[in-house]
Image 1 (spheres, rainbow, N blue to C red):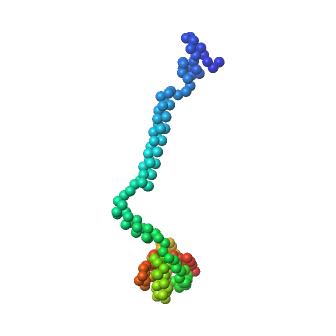
Image 2 (image 1 turned 30 degrees about the vertical axis):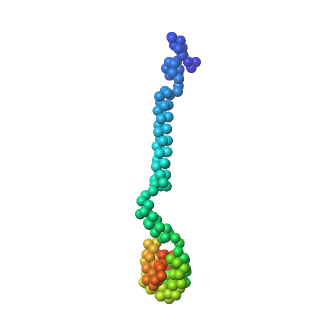
Image 3 (image 1 turned 60 degrees about the horizontal axis):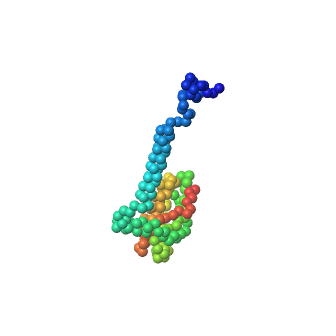
Length: 176
C-alpha cells in the first residue's frame, strides 16, 4: 500500500504531504523560464552588437578612404621575378660552411623587371657580399632569415630607380 488514508479521508503521498503532487511549485517553473529567456536575450543582443560593430559601423569616411587605398595598394600583388641561385661560403668556418639560396623578387611593375634584369650584375654582387658576411648562427633561425630578407630588399632598392622591390621570397634555402 503506497497510499495511506488519514482521518479526514484525504490521501497522503509517500512523504506524508497532503494534497500536493510530486512536481515542483509553479513559481519555480516560471523563474527558470524567465532565466532561460533572459539568457537567450543576452546572447541575441551580444550577437547583434558584434555584427553591427564588425560589419555596419562606418567611421570617418574621409580619413579611412586614404588609409584603405594605401592598404589595398600594398596588398596588391606585384610582379614576381626569379634570380639564379646563390652558393656562398659563410663568414665563420664551422660545421655549416655553405649556403645555397634561390630567391624571387616581388616588384611593383613589369617595367621594374626590365630594370632589374639590366642591373643583375650589381644586384647579384650586393647580395653575394651580404650573404658572405653572415654566419650560420645569423641565418639559422626564422628571425635571422627575416632580417636577411629585409637587408636584401634594402640593398636591391639602392640600385633601382623606377620603383621598388616590395619583398624577397626564399624558394630554396640550404645550409651544409
